[in-house]
Amino acid sequence: MDDLIKYAPELALGFWENVKLSAVGAVVSLILGTILVAMRVSPTPVLRVVGTFYVNVVRNTPLTLVLAFSALGLSDQLGLVFSQVPRTNSFWIVAMGLSAYTAAFVCEALRSGINTVALGQAEAARAIGLTFSQSLRMIILPQAFRAVIAPLGSVMIAMIKNTTVATAGGYLADVAATMKIVFDDTGASIPIFIGIILAFMALTMPIGFFTGWLARRLAVAR
Amino acid sequence: MTENGDVTPLVQMENVNKHFGALHVLKDINLTVSRGEVLVVIGPSGGGKSTLCRTINRLETIDGGRIVFDGQVLPAEGKSLARLRSEVGMVFQSFNLFAHKTIRENVTLGPVKVRGQAKDAADKRAMELLERVGIAAQADKYPAQLSGGQQQRVAIARALAMDPKMILFDEPTSALDPEMVQEVLDVMIGLARDGMTMMVVTHEMGFARRAANRVVFMADGQIVEENTPDEFFTNAQTDRARDFLSKILTH
Image (cartoon, rainbow over all chains, first blue to last red; front, side, top):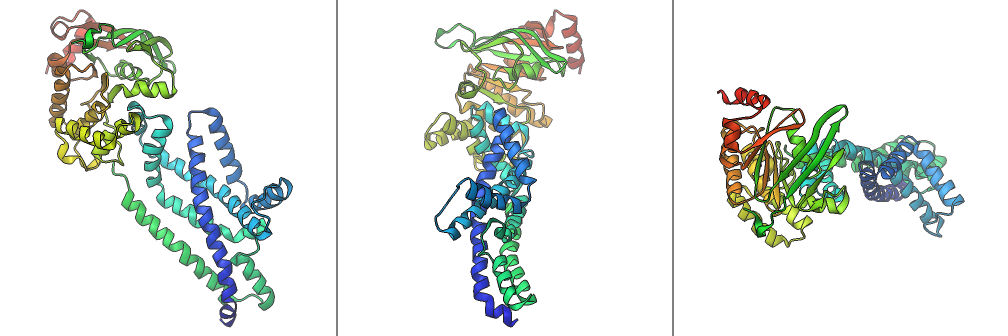
């Protein structure tokens, strides 16, 4: 218990990095996932192929490899640099890798939501003269989102926990990396383990409750 | 009932063919719909009536022939197709009101998003139309809170809000409980009297007798017979039509 109290400030700083990664990851992956699902259901074959290819490659690649590739491949080899400050650059590399990875799961959750929307909704939208993108934006996706709020919550929870592999992308400031550094000093500490677990639960459990509540509240009556 | 004395047909279908896989659902269809005409399409299930109706706003594509709407061949896709669809109202068997939008929003969506009307003006017009179909009091409810008959009347208001040149009705009363059929038919009869061009796929012979200018009898993907309602119901020319009528008119 003493270890936990002694190292709490460092661990808290580390955990704050996980929170920041989660926040960026949530926003970017939801946007990117929505773009991907629009591609996957679009009438343009090229977009469908690209969307499908992306989802199948990224979803089936281990996250540690996605992050390592982002850092070593995209950033070091191909020169994708967000900032000249190494620490800041690593943060964004990891945030983008995590978002790109999570977007594939967001896309598939949304796609299953689109399948719950009756075909007649899209036909009625087209029949009043809405274009494909208008009917997707105004009619299909709003109903699809509501149908998959709870599964999207699960995707977000997984994403938050996935921030702890940030080290694979060269970002050594998150709580898992901090924990490892602390353990190098103190040896493994069960109170520290438990403290970190509780911190994550405090972050993720409300998301589960909130999305469950929201899903019931916004359910589209048919 | 022609507007501006324009006597060119509103819809011209020339040798239209359509297959669903091996099934030949529309066979060399030639049909015109005049401006202001109320055309009722009847016939046995699977005869191609709904498909015919849905080709006019290209919810179904065709494999051969051509369809001219208001002097213009149906556009294949894109913005021009969307524009054409905005001029052709459609009322579906299963209503297809937007489930996540209120009744009022269902009616204003097209005018605001497709036509670019101001929201206030669209709202005002929506309320007039909802008044006309007798649903004004339910404007802020969601579709699932309304009965089938009410939903279908909203669907008609939604189509009218676009000031369409024509409205397609694809079996508008087939999914309704019997006691709700008449309220929808009454609205449709009103539209017919006001001179709206309508193509109505239906099994409601009473509506055909009261409101139609012409009846088209379809079976096996072909137009078997077309005539005035009186002639058709009392003096059908083909065996196929007489056989169909004997099955539905005996009770």
